[in-house]
Length: 423
Image (cartoon, rainbow, N blue to C red; front, side, top):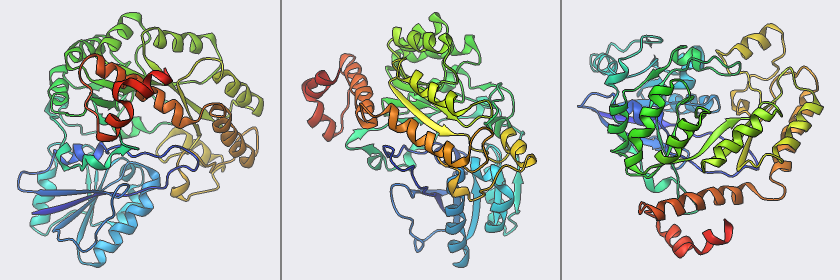
């Protein structure tokens, strides 16, 4: 059977450095398909979708709310041609009711062990409208390596520089952060993969540069340290969300190849300043993630926070405005309070104000969001700061003989000419 899997494009935020990473959801999903399925993958962010290509069954995988309208358009086009369309992925779960209007089947939940049923139903012309496996989680130990063979890796680079590949070592999250949908999607429980299974997958990944996409690695000290210990011989260089703020953990993370982390900067406390310093003490870079528009923030608070960022030696900063994604507590609260005024899902990109803030106008919050980006990157553009981080990782790769450059990297960075000028 020929199965066509499509990842819809979305509009990138204006003014930010644009690059595309190989998507994670589709390659994990592809690993769950029955052996008789011949899957071909198209990421519309890097190549166009062909509507005339031969396929028996169409799958659309959506991660972001900003993908759903385009996903619906793709599905409508294929269905007019007589093709059956299956939807899955995170934003399918967040927008299931609307998505069902454009689908022959919608799959909710984690796919491992469930696709045999879906494809058997397709073959028997008995496809169900809804396959709901929410909170019926597969055995985490049964999750094997993702199907990265479906990717065209030549399409994932930025100005000739090899980008990161994506990998997950756990699912679920024991935290329940106010703007986040993870509790709805994966339950409020931490489900770590056995360390040996995670390492088994890491050993299959040719790319030396990784983004570990787990919601937080700081959920089990024992597991976290065992994972980092086991990763050391692989000599990977990786990015992740929060690592536990403990010198023993940070030391192991650095030895395991921690390149930089995403750290939420939610106030101007000494705690934040000291935490970022500790990361740097272990040679780990920091990208501060800064959320603007919470009800406890005034205009002065936001300005003070932006000034604070310039004092604490962040390597990068990423600013977002509070966005009420469906199935989150913030969405429920703002709906109840009648404060959401924009339901165009293309605008739910964390860069556009779609609700009435408590302490300022929507227009003013939008201005402050733009001001934050401009202020932080005024003296050194985002692209230059990114270049510094990539220069550091390339030096580390050269030192441990894992540097495998693309041609452009070899040309630009041979003998460390540009690297040494930047560090």
